[in-house]
Amino acid sequence: LLLHPVEKMSKAKGKKPQRSGSNVFANFDQQQLLEFKEAFTIIDQYRDGFISEMDLKDMWASLGIIQDDKFCAEMLKVSPGQITFTAFLTFMGEKLADTDTEDVLHNAFACL
Image (cartoon, rainbow, N blue to C red; front, side, top):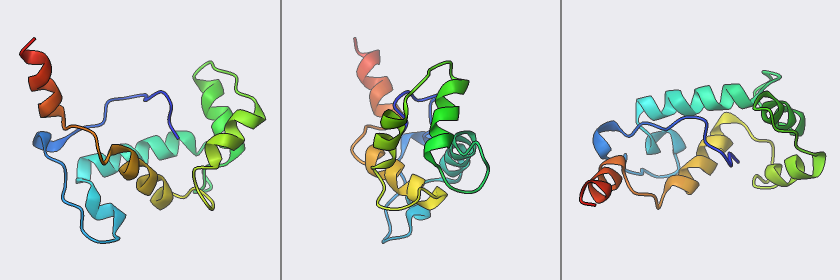
């Protein structure tokens, strides 16, 4: 959903929280949940609890980027239904599932 991250997401002590069943909230630590909630609130311009096409257009415009309806509609196709905070967390969890922790990345660049 986010093509250009606005802020770096925190990684508590470089460890990924353990996944536990279908509870998407258990996949993230408290700091990550707060940051995702903040990001969701920034995108949810109309504060109705859902990310809509208009929310996306307004969010992009707030970044100084004008996107057309087709682009925003394509972004919404990642979700089979309305994008709530829980759906947003699920999507972000899927995107972050195979990424390295901050410590691993730091160590990789430290040896260069």
